[in-house]
Length: 330
Image (cartoon, rainbow, N blue to C red; front, side, top):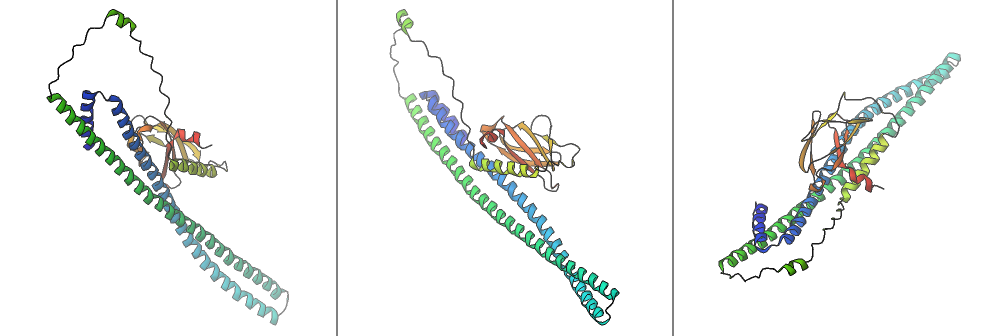
């Protein structure tokens, strides 16, 4: 409401004072700050996707750890049984040394050694899983800390925009008061002589307007880091060249407007497409899943890369970023 009131007052001041250039500059500054806020919100959404992915990995490792501990318990039981059989075979071979007792001793010894190796290998597996689980917990803590910091930056940016609007509103109010005071005072129109033919001929011709330089897009460092991580993840995942089986008979993006767009299968349940987006808070539907995303005003009509990670059908991921960011990765 404050912004709408500011706009109406500001336009009134433009009509009175002709300050269109100042108004355009003010609006451009406000638009830039609002676009910066949208970039922050977009990066925050990407962080939340990362947190969700890490949490999914942790659930997977919890399951792996439980199975590994069960396997270790069974391996230890088998080891103890093999140890008893080995000790029994040694006693029997000592009492009745013959070819049969010697053969049984070799078999019992081999079984005991294999059982011992089984216990050791399962211990190492648990250590590896616990180490990976610890690393994931560290990543999760870092990602949650980044989200907390992002929330503070977003809150600060919202306050900055609110302060800008309030300042602009105060100036627009003052401009309207000055305009009303000027209208109230009687002003005699000065007599302006009609321009002569010679003066009209001597008037300089308007210079042709120069083409405006193309505005350099602002790329948020967090967005650039996000794209680099996702590119590295995808490259590592597809490095073996084995595409694997298609999980979906068809996978289509249903944008807020327009027709459905099919995804291209990359392999390992990774799917990709490139399509233009609309600015604002959007909901993208992919088959039966829905994903909310924020698109900055500067990216209205810009082509975005969509990557659908379908390795976990219970909680799939949607990775999105502007296509023009790829040119900044080198």
